[in-house]
Image (cartoon, rainbow, N blue to C red):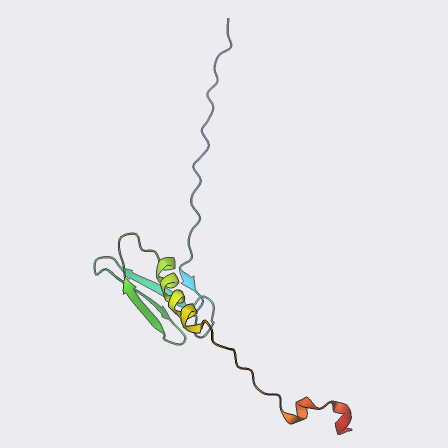
Length: 103
């Protein structure tokens, strides 16, 4: 005689991680102020900043998500800033000398 087969419960399917819907503005660097609006019937998408009012519009399809719109906006921003040297302010004369010289 054999042992009865026990029913093993199947593991519950894991839910996929949720993607972000609010992002950091590439112009004013405020976190969580860029919102993406996707109109699938009109087939366009727009990402806009609530602080500095910068916006980006692109075409959309049935699979477009907010992270896709933001990514399309960031790519040209990165390409435009590539090769740009960050300019720093020249130190003031008072800052260039030490405090010992003033005493």
